Length: 393
Image 1 (tube, rainbow, N blue to C red):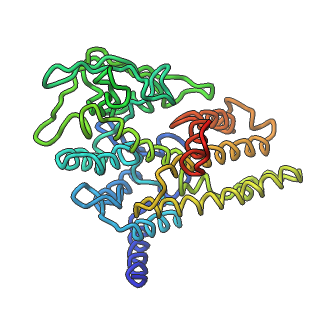
Image 2 (cartoon, rainbow, N blue to C red):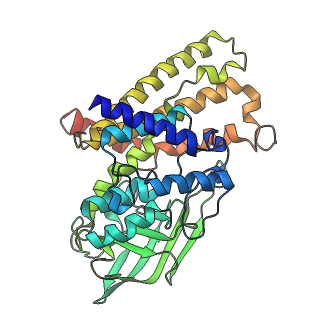
Image 3 (tube, one colour):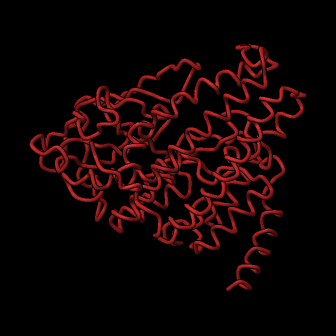
């Protein structure tokens, strides 16, 4: 087995050297450096296009998905080797997608064969861009109190309601959306629907944050017709009607894994050397940077362990909550230290020297980390109850 992995590593290293352009080995500087795919997507440059197409053709946009659904069919050890080799050359992800991080795993677990053949292949090929319709005004962490309602019309539903904090809703092609279809049962009255954002009655409005413009939107649904079927064995919902909460809970685990940045090099990488060029001589700040670097390296190891356990089905069901909370706190700490090291210059808001106030805006943006994907208070409650098994109040 070890010899097979060594051979796979050598083959992977050779392929990456031949196919990953130098431009795709540089840090991400702006939004256009990230390729999200979708029917209206545009490549920033030829290097981004070449890197995406090479990975798409090899199944490396979703390397651990089955080949019949657009993946490479890699085993968990092989997928880990690929992650390591991509990290070694600082390769950017060829495709970023809520379809990959959230909907895809849910479809692999709950979807019909028809849904998998259609939607998973479209996701893997970067042909469709998804957004998530979960939170509502007054219904964030208490998600099951949601009020968006779908009236049953036989072969379709008519959906009315509002979602909020819908990331990139204004750029998404389709939405996976929680809709109440039975008002008499709080948990077994929710359906997990799939529908086109171009449908009549769907509209979006961007939300501006304290840090400036953001990817978040309000999403409105006014008499939106959602088909119960898009063709043979392709229902317009995932799982069973009125049992969408089962799908939603499963997907939330993958969302929290994504938000935690488990295995994320930027979040788990050393900060001290990055700031050393500032000539930091304050002993208290230097000690804080050293403490952060230790925590970040430990988090990186924990992330790798978590991903390995997740891939083989041995992760604790509540472990994504732990990773999400730890990743949130680490990221906030990282940006606090960067602001401290930057001094008054880091507070600048508009100059070209700071790329339009990137340090300050990024620091402000991290304040939302403890809210999105489930508040830190909710994460700690879940950790206390399900991992530490502490008694309830």
